[in-house]
Length: 156
Image: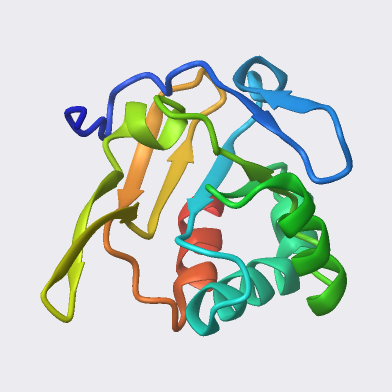
């Protein structure tokens, strides 16, 4: 498990698969602020709400000049179904590679539920500045009101 990367650190380079095919890289976002929201799993209640909330504000993020990207370990095809089912407009990418971005950030971590331990995504959001430095981190995110809070911070 990697050490956690936090505020003031440079966002690691990444190349993530997109649901529509192709990839997205960290370099494509240089020069403008970026919000990366990591969530555990497509089509689960909290993750669906979080994605709908960010989608509802996607236009406001764009108007503020802030890029938005939701990331989970789900494969691109599952993302495509999730986007279609819920009419999501916040872009999504897959971090399914072992040793990928969530591993580098230290948020693919050991979790436990009902006495069982397993590896899972810790719901975390990063606000990255135009130079690629992490300006703010929200760890162990509570979904309600989160997208609004991130938008306010991104505008600030």
